[in-house]
Length: 522
Ligand code: FAD
Image (cartoon, rainbow, N blue to C red; front, side, top):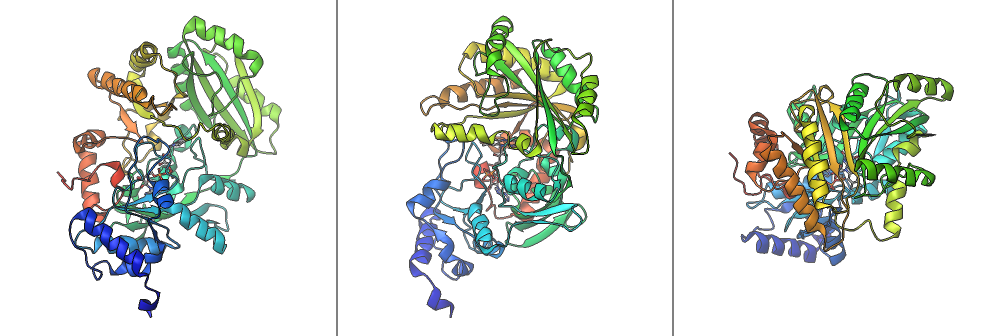
């Protein structure tokens, strides 16, 4: 009988926490579903500590409990128990906690540690990754890591086509944002490559959705910042996996030549990946995201930086297959790059395996971890900027604020994308222009220093607002509903609120995004 296995202390603790945190008495009957899952709730110091922090290491919010689901039903039961309580408790799915502003936290609520589900599935040998027989798509659990999706699919000669730069992120986590990288200009962000999903909504219902079926939920969840449901399965489209990658970096001193070439290259379907970043004395020549430039050239590059203050590095890649010859690929790229405005004599290239290319950030991470430098504060700022305003951004921010403040920066990314590869019905909010840039300030800092970067980030946002630069934050960190309204714009906000009322009417999910916490919908 259920009573025999009932674990009074854990149950009691949850009850107490709900009473103390919400100030109202919630009876055992009202959260009856918890009875099935109470043994998966933890509140030991280690479990709480782990989920009270994230990659940003700036925001720290302690939940009442951590939930270790062993199945999708467990997640549904947990959400149902909150939904049916007179006073619901907040719930946040936590993929890898690689957010930088507490987005996967739930102060005084319950954090669902999706890694526990991943471990459980592995233990049972019921993998959360399953490729269809024709190799057209892969079904992956929302708790799975992209690195495992890559390894599993490549082994079968196929692979997803759109990635993030770093692969130790969870599928549910990146699909809740967008999942962007150098492939996005051509293949769209990761959310544009999802065919179907299973989602546990804020009412605890497990619903399968796609563009054809329950499309409102499908569009809501993609880029939906965890507000509408927990993604428990995503069907991702597959392509034949390339085997090799030709990977090139070119240097520019002139920002207009750099952006002109970037924009030309993203307007044609010749490349598979295009990014860009800044080289300045404020940051190292090689960084943790990838060491590419040979040591023997560092002095030459540093001299050039001294002369121009900033170099813009264009990074591009072309994938190829084992039946294609390297010579042909070389020739094709040579023709493509003819007439480009880069600095002659500073051309760098590599041929690497497809997996090595996609997993390029991992070695830097491991090195930082070995130095104890991975778990430092990361006051990141990620922006989308309309193409028509990127020159103004360069002069005001790259050549203005960054120089004036002169603090050591981490990698600064800058590369364009095509709006046509995004689906505006999805929740992700992007600029209105056909081409927009992503700019990422990926700072790492000491525990006593992150305030300086925070101030710099705020100055950048103020500069944009004062000068009418219509930026959208990616991985946005807004703290008031007014800011979120601006983020989405009037129409999109209206839809976002309607969807929230439909799929999570009691505002249970992902409170760390700070969108609906005050329950004050307008
Ligand atoms: P978490 O931080 O755990 O969660 C993020 C949000 O999603 C939270 O609100 C959470 O509640 C919600 N969530 C988590 N799982 C689910 C689920 N299954 N269903 C519904 N909601 C869920 N992003 C890019 O787009 N491109 C990059 O190249 C890129 N590179 C990165 C490199 C590094 C080193 C780091 C630290 C981050 C990078 N990111 C990049 C950002 C990253 O995509 C986001 O931080 C993402 O949220 C991280 O995934 P996660 O699994 O850790 O999510």
